[in-house]
Image 1 (cartoon, rainbow, N blue to C red):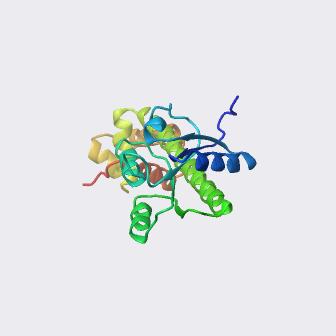
Image 2 (cartoon, rainbow, N blue to C red):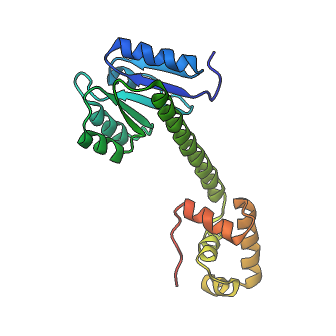
Image 3 (spheres, rainbow, N blue to C red):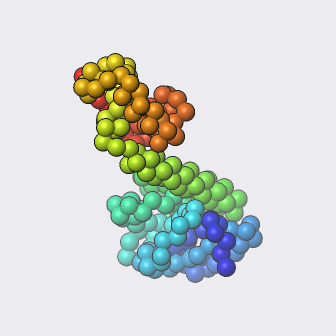
Length: 209
């Protein structure tokens, strides 16, 4: 039974010996892993809801690792990648890193270098997952607002005073204060500054006169 939330390291390399060696290393430090001989085998695997990263060989049958990195990005599968290769060069390394790779290691590499890269990749994935979770919770709070409360929110975070908002919406300051209070409560915002940050995370359009 795999513990819920335990991180998972995936390995794609057509050399069975390399796969076994990396899995043995990961097991020795308590990390779970799965290995695949081809990208196609990896894609058939159900995507796990846990922090994960991918150790990817550059040279693979049918497709190279850089092409597969681009395919994953195009399909929306965001997973931190550590490239390993026996035939690396500077242009290849630069291209991989510019496309978001965590590390590019040339075989033979030190075990500790690989472990350091894997821990960095897992930390990156944890942070990305937390950000997605926080944004989803914010989105849910925003969707609980009424249309008028959303209007008030947009004007508030754009810096308008209650009097200006009341004039803009054709209502009274008292009504605006009530709506504003509802917005703060539903969004769980402790201050105007916090509300502005929330609106920025949700990428809400600014209201301008």
